[in-house]
View 1 (cartoon, rainbow over the protein chains, first blue to last red):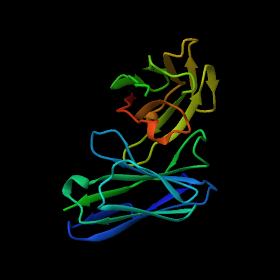
View 2: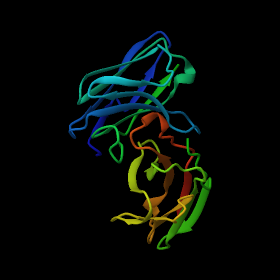
View 3: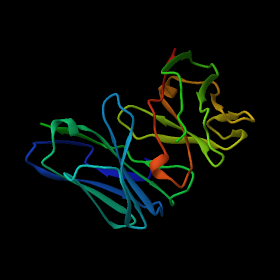
Length: 113
Length: 111
């Protein structure tokens, strides 16, 4: 356990479904992140939240919608996804932007059918 | 943006010391060097970070020469459980958009 908890661990959804990924940390971290890791591709930064404010959107399609209600929780809302969106979605946090290292969760393995 | 180059894969044996070198010829003055470890279907785990010379913690050592154009992650006495992908990152720590995880080095430990 890293202190960053992601649910669900696995998710299969159809292209017309709406689902949400959840990330929770009680490490006292103020910066939270969503990353995407596709098979055989490097991790891609998707979104950054710093003190609940979105500070980075790395040209992510609008079918991915993040939400950060407080510093401990981060959501990624999914709708009308494509099969190429199938990947491991990782949440990470760090005490603040500029802190030394990220703490990652174990990820949600998403399959879009 | 400092580009990093690492070997794609390495094999070693249990009990050996493993050194993984990362090249970063255009590292900037304020960039830090950070290494992460990732097991299959898990998120990366922070291992060690340094700016210059040598840094050691309970898991690994990081050697950085004076010109900082490369760095070497040293894992002492590896075990089978050290089989993982190791990422070298070089970036300003306050610029999330510049912290790039490349393809990493796939380390395979043999019995």
